[in-house]
Length: 488
Ligand code: BES
Ligand code: MN
Ligand code: ZN
Image (cartoon, rainbow, N blue to C red; front, top):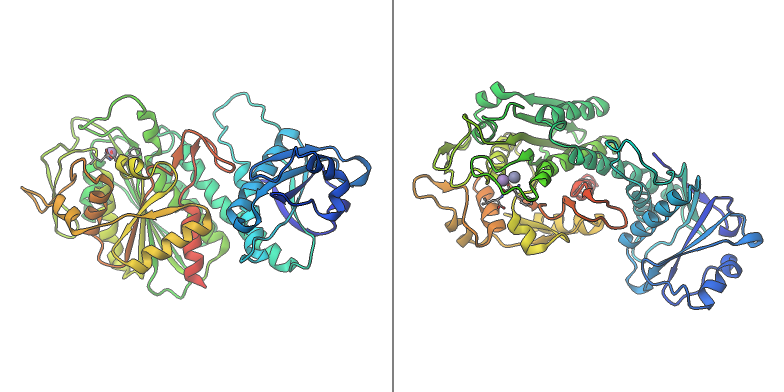
């Protein structure tokens, strides 16, 4: 992985293959770079518009081999997310140029400190360079730079910048782990594979790992997971990771849906796009990625991660529409469609979370197509039973650049999932599909709880400055941000 450093030097004196400087709309380049950058700026070719990038060969006036100007947009609306994107753009350009060393001149957004800015830049650089290339036998996409140095030009605290850069790299590594897990196809990423990766995370960071196999799941009375996983030959796993660095008291619990392939089961999905259902474990992947970062940052907090993992397949032993399940909290559920499987395994996990007497529980799941219709790919749906917690999760998403937007859980949505034969039914019909799914989960959440529907954000057809096609790692960084906030 690229090494992120911090240096205090005048930009014109930095020895690097690629020197990168961000410039605000309509503003002049920093003094030392003005003779090199002036032709591009003065001609109007480079205006500082957000996302714009101009590569210059500066010659004598700079110690660096090349100069990349990056548009930062309007100064008044500059925020860490734009810094993250600029660093990603810089890192990607360095890769195509095969530049070994990058010097990225830091610009600290107003209202943000240099530590937070360095963190955002480091995240951008690492995430921008991410690719999932392991199954390509041939590839040529340049060479990843060895070093990416954040250059402090002014009076910024170097120590704080270094801490921020280090934290950013660790947080990004967690997101990379989440992306790698989610991009992995279902013939590799089975429930047992996820359990093995969880064991590795636990061993690396001194966490307690508990994995229940099929028999253990049945014994524990986790009906949803046992039922959904019954017909799968890759047997289900119930994965629990405990990070106990906050004194061993009441923890925050994070829960991630990990359906390693969702065919829909007996209520089978149409062929078109079904390959994307390998991403139906994106929630579990993000939770494991967040735990990797939590361990690596050694957060002084008690955190428990729960990942119910299974395939959802048709078969002679599969569950069927009309079946009635008795869930771990005693509530009964009539199955209307075996394709609404995520809420069944999440309900088990929420019931299981009760034993920790948690201060807060956040679950994340690629739960409904309806959420994608509501918010597209630009925000995760956010629901919950506690206003303050929902606001805290939303704020964490904003800071992390992983946006989550509140959706309502009115009583009427609960009415919509009241059952005829049983207490509840596992589908509330077409109207408000994301909200009836949330209302279903609420029936199992006996503590402050928030739910993130990441069906539209966990993966995508096209990336942005620091995501690629495929898994995004969302909401691993949101979760880490939330947990950092809770450990302060
Ligand atoms: N995994 C899907 C949700 C999904 C859909 C994720 C599209 C990503 C993209 C989930 O298990 C599912 O099938 N949900 C159904 C629920 C319905 C049958 C009540 C849905 O959204 O159609
Ligand atoms: Mn489904
Ligand atoms: Zn699913």
